[in-house]
Length: 145
Image (cartoon, rainbow, N blue to C red):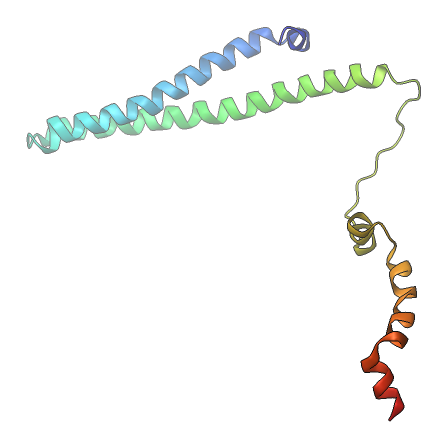
């Protein structure tokens, strides 16, 4: 954990701000449930329509604030995490003797999957098929006709 702090260099204020945003988001979510309980107890059960209307308006405002805080938190954490990963990657690749010049990602082919699970190439598997077919008694009896 100590080593990761250096990747927050210059970003500690943003991390603190995001911590406050997360606290506000959690408070908005918790406050929503408390408002629902109050609306049921003091509005619906008591038959107080005015109180119920006020609590619903407050609930909607709290939910909207929570939604905004959640959006800020997601975007902020994504940006902060991306900067940390870039710093980690930079430090990792600085230690390599040869620089990485190109990285390619592709979907595996059927041949790749076959090689992974069998240890053989598909062409190697097909080459032995003729011999196995000749040795198969069912094939030999069919050819004899």
